[in-house]
Length: 313
Image (cartoon, rainbow, N blue to C red; front, side, top):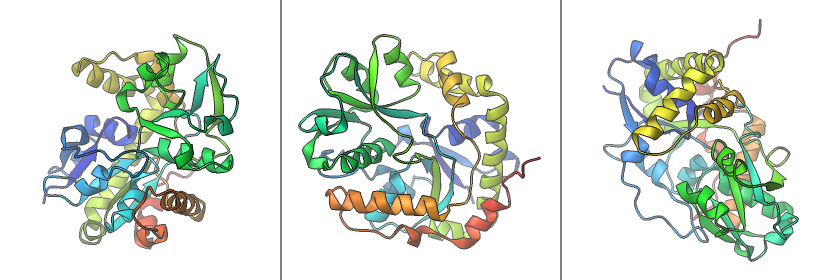
């Protein structure tokens, strides 16, 4: 059978793996599915729901079998009633982004966001970061006006159309080169912000060899990224330029150098953090129901991932 792997630039590991040919050595019939080419469906109002496109395509004909995303989508999948299984998790990516305001903004602390327009890539890790920050300040999702800024976030921030921005690199590089910003709250100390990978339970149970090959290939490709960050950055720049979007090779190289690579088994700390996010999302009306994230753990999958983790020399 052909194994379908969903990829897009926001999961750096899978995006690079798509271009290295490493996985094809073990799975000649792999089919790469560009998430950007799939129907996105109607995007929910960011004040009242989370987009489910990532998890919906995991269960759709013409979708994919394995995907890598940021922190929030597997919670969304569970909230939509999908039977997903965690495949693995990266180390913390706390340097990848933070909540910022313009240097001259009257907003001095998170509590000042009440009633303000805050840009997020809604449904991504940015939703969770903002929600954790609001909760820490005694605010709820309803106290701010979240704006699903997407690819226009940097422009909206520079133009003053949003009051604060949950930004990430390399987009933050573009903004910081043009204007002075002030960090409202750092990601570090708030949550770990890892990348993660997940699949369907039925796919995991019936395709153990393929799943093992995917994990091993990701580990090998991630080691290559660590050793060759500029060559890896070129994949992202070439992709952006092919779509008519400007991209800076130095900025992408810096971003990749500052990110952890390698896949680890899910552990109690990660699951506790996912559960806290899931509880907050549900309490703020962003999930249709409460979920138990530990239902998405298969012990033997953790054993597979643990067996591929390199031992320090």
